[in-house]
Length: 65
Image (cartoon, rainbow, N blue to C red; front, side, top):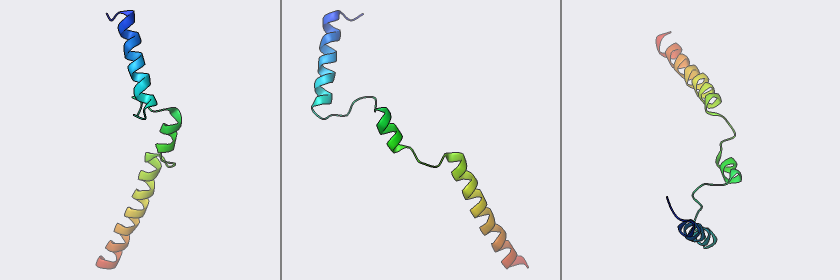
């Protein structure tokens, strides 16, 4: 188990790294929200299914009828 001195030293190193412009290990909540897509994956999947399904049916109608 690390000693109190070692913990303080590691915390100071981490704080200095963050202050010097290096990225923190864990991104903030605000950064996570900015990277999120406004459309969820399942909604995107449904939209793609409807569009691609319509294209496939239209091609089948054109080719076989």
